Image (cartoon, rainbow, N blue to C red; front, side, top):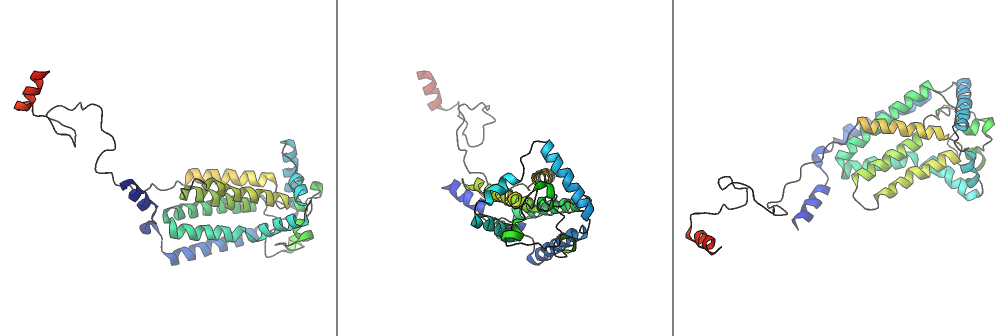
Length: 286
């Protein structure tokens, strides 16, 4: 019973670790603004983006990676399936990440602070790479021979003229923050929960991987690079230590032998009085 109470207490939210709500709202809003401005700042490098796309495509083929069309071919077998993939790409990215942060804030404050730091570090590194390496997605690359499923089947989150699209930078394919954020959500929930089914959270990044590649919005290399960036962020930003759980008043097991000397008995054990008549009689019987 004492173990059950201890486990329940350990799962209670640590209110002392929860940062002020107003400060967090301002911080998240500021990070989102930097995210949007950073992506737009990398806009307009059309020639460089297409040149880099050719390099990425050639590198993937030389490395033996399967063509992105393998995944898209599966989606295109069903009009409903490809529309579901487009809808998932357009609607799940931000709401899922926001819901993840909100749940952690109220239920696992310590994990929230850690996940927010990891997410900010990953996003910052990705924005820097967007500026340094503008990349046209495979749906724009003629050599790839892929369909722009968003424009053909809908819904689409991008305008028809990428060079003048002021709402989103369509040349920020490297790395894929869609997949990166989905992987952060899965890793964060696995670390913050104790269910035996918690590994199923990995289905979210797996499904996101199939969607971003199948809709021709990202290359395999975009996913590989963001995974490497996340691995670095996780290695650099460690989850703070858990609070020390109070020890049970008595040891769970009793040592087989007590090697403490008569004058230095171990805690919880009475030292036999060798001078008592009872001890003498028991010794005489042996």
